[in-house]
Length: 397
Ligand code: ACO
Image 1 (cartoon, rainbow, N blue to C red):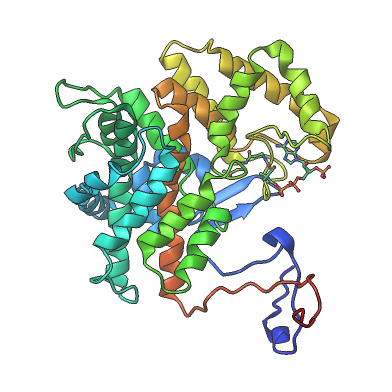
Image 2 (image 1 turned 135 degrees about the horizontal axis):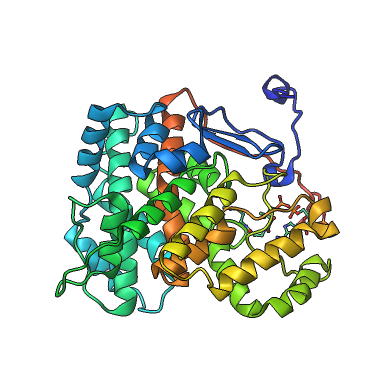
């Protein structure tokens, strides 16, 4: 049931809803989630079908425009994105201000925010075309910036994008190629990468998307808003979970230790949680996790590493948790991040880059919501609070 409290607010009534568990802050046409039945639709299309039949750039087009492109529209879109893949050469100097061992998400907050310095004066957020170009720039430049973070951390030269490659293949080449040798992208890995991008592309009003929408509601520069989204995503309760899952599987180390970790997760006095488990909205299963698990099996089999010890621990952990009364009663299931790290690791992506991949993929969701906000009559976001501090008192004499 939907209760619209707007008419009441004038009379001084408001709702108190910590964590926005049941408060809608906006209307949106982009993504539909039915948490009870494990349904996720983008523009009406089920995520399972998009992951199977579509590709990331097509999903980007869908999220931005509400419709799948025809062949001509798609070719034009792919070409436009290709034309924006390079970043300003001065930005490479910016990287050098960071410590080599800085977490790549810290660098991403900085460099994506820094794009606002390159695209501010000429940007009119009330012009639909300007907003569109802004989305193109972000979709195109995020893989370049993400790969630059990695190259910087290992002291290798930055790789320029190669625009005749697919989006996923271009990213892998910028990550793992070097200017002094040919790098042939494995098509299986490029497709797996593309699927990971699709599965993370949008998820309606999660913490990072709400952050982007709220920051955008003040009319702030969109590149700075996306940097705010990256910051919100970084936490382990949100996008940082994919990195935390692999660290947890490492810590478990052996199937024999799983029960000990399950008990820790159930202990109300222990802050430890099973990373990659549970979701605010999904109370049945996360449909993205199902596709991710299948992709994980396929990719590892194709690479001939189906006996990966972490995959075995992950599957056993899932099995034990799903039979445990604690997890059943609380409807806690693996989420999208439970298996994504295993695939990313198999592709050769280092653990501290996992959340960067999530940020890269989610950028289209963030900018689509930002664009939707500015495309319709809107209001600055301004949550209220329930004050629990001291009552009025006099400053000590
Ligand atoms: N392990 C153990 N117990 C858990 C877990 C978990 N992963 N998740 C929730 N619970 C328990 C809580 O302790 C609580 O138990 P209680 O009722 O006895 O107090 C109950 O389940 C409900 O949990 P909440 O924290 O109220 O659920 P909420 O909707 O606020 O949190 C969240 C959702 C943050 C995803 C949570 O499940 C979690 O921390 N999971 C682990 C981190 C993770 O995987 N995050 C990625 C989310 S998906 C994404 O962002 C892409």
